Length: 296
Image (cartoon, rainbow, N blue to C red; front, side, top):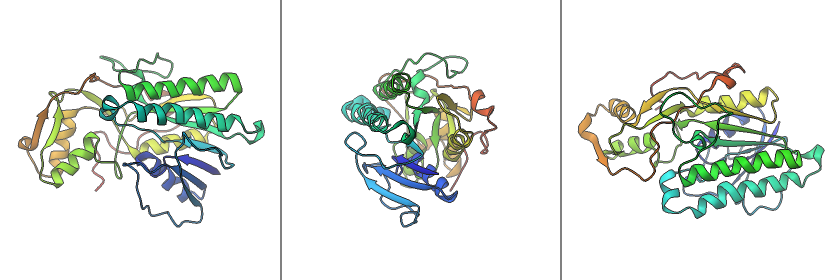
């Protein structure tokens, strides 16, 4: 199998690249190398790996491949609130450009457009869990751009017969995550003898999925040869931000005195929850235990 992977030097993308190279597949990795990208990765010199430094909103050619997997995105909600422009450029215009490049190929040479989205496109929910058929109601600029990208993909599928898969992932955590998300930032703070910052009262609920479980879910869909479907991928592992912080404190033998409550951010979603019933029908399930898995 030959892949084009966009954003393969970021968090989730790098774990996907690592796994498919281990499986013997060929990867062309397109990454613009933003602040969250990794300069050096263990497979840089592997014969099955090629790196192209480029912005997906500006490239004019796609190498031939079987599947294009789009991880490239601006993804930090706080940053999207402060400045929406990079999010629109990468998450909307970048996806549009990739779709145009795929559409421009002869039908027999078109790769499957496999897009990595987020559970945040649904918005929040007080009870129950969103299914793939539910309405999208994003509530911040980041999730709005991800929802817009999905609408473009569905339109290109219907209008131009571009084959696609969309996965909507719950909150991921694990190695190589940039130190701006809750778990990675908490770990970095404690290593530097700083306090963990908690927005508001810490009662906001997220569904936490270990990154390698997410990658296995993506590959389960690919291995099944599925096209033109949407899948949620979630461990259904719900924890408040405060529960997450206490778990990280336990890893470092710290107590609540190492917490620092800060002003809540604008438009804070109260609870995310998605059903993974559909992908579990493919035989996928999260291999890492509920709660937080300590990988280091």
